[in-house]
Image (cartoon, rainbow, N blue to C red):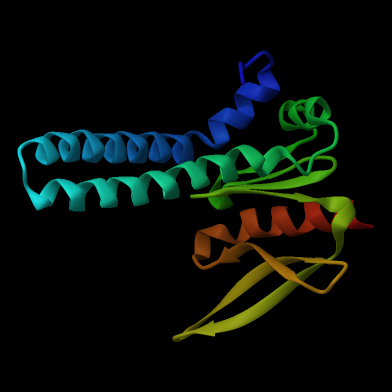
Length: 174
């Protein structure tokens, strides 16, 4: 897909880390297949082993690429989604690698996750004990009761970012 708008560019900036990882994986499995081809012609069993390994890595990599491309399949109006990413009302919280748009919550960690707010029922904060200190965790709960972890306040300097995420989401869910 060719990038045509600033919103599309913003989305591809969010998935850049994951896309780079997939490109590196593709280079690795293609290289394994090339080495396997050379080894097969030189008459060793190692070539067949490398070919099987390269094919398995290739299959995993291609499946991961398809999964990344399918992240936008659940979004009916993609242009509107891209426009929301660059909208002035969108709240971006870099501490949690989180964006809250008018209609979506976007987590862009090692894997991108997009949660439509219309499919969410409520915002919850949970407390869990982690050693000698407590961690606040922010969840979006969907209509079936499934809790999706959005943010974990694990450091003392993250309270303001956590509170911003909570209040923004709480305001959108009302």
